[in-house]
Length: 458
Image (cartoon, rainbow, N blue to C red; front, top):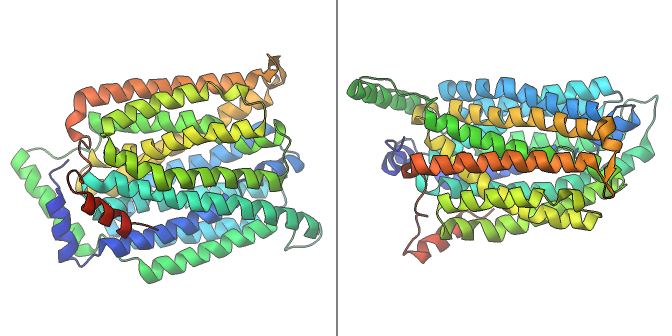
């Protein structure tokens, strides 16, 4: 898929007057607002749902349903953005998220919370389109580094969002009026804040983001693809063995990590007996870890080592780290446990995303991105159902060496899934090594890397 070369992309950007730096700056701002709004509700969903009579498993069902809705609709957003342009459907998706957050603020029953999670999933196409836009404006050699930049943005959002959400949730509990409309539950203030942040994201997208797939460029890509088909006498395929293999790698990575992370609020609530405010603070501490790792670790490692080595090493690291999960007897051990996991995720995700997009034709990046998000959504459907089933069923009340057996099962399930990913990565390296990023794009030119880092800071 490297026929659509760096030269072609740079020519396109010049021809269609697309400024890469401005596009990436606008994406970072929009993505930050999205993550901030989304992470506001992390500390609150589980405690509020339990207070309304939910079981732990039903909380998993609500999380899974959100992912299921994303699974069903993400390919549609990607396909529509390929056909009609990125910007309009990014804005539509943001308006849908705004509606979901607004209704979330008024939720005072499990049924209403359930509905808002479905609505948020239906319009959860932002990441599909953002990934497609990055593919539109970057060359293969630096794409994984540009994808990694989003991890830094994610870190800032994950620091502020849960901290603010937990604080606002505590205030909302003091203002609850069962007969009122505006403060019907602890979700009210965080929901209003998330909706307000989404409004800012919409304004930024409308005002700053330039369309990266205008009609003329879409037509030009279609023309190039037709010429390639004539030369090859066959039409390029999206679902090649290489593309499917990399989707499977993403699935295993997502499923393995989500097995624990999707139930984090329940674990902090039940295992460590923390309140909403403290849960928000723990998420913020995790966010600080993410920021430090993203800011100082990812660029160095991506610059220094080949993708093949990074993929193999950090996948095995995750396998071994998850095996320690049952023995995190206090919350501070949990915080330390998160560190190497975040480092591994921060390295693996951008490489896996970039490699998956490389395996797709240039005129179908939106569809490919939709299926990639779909893969993550499938894992996000399965993981919370499995982990909350462990916690909710009778097995969750049994102990071994002073630890709930449920936590052993979660650790073994995560480790086994990630070991399968390791085997897939080794197979990928052995059969498709030529498509991996074997150079960083900065060898022998430190000044170029320094300039790149300066230009792409948030």
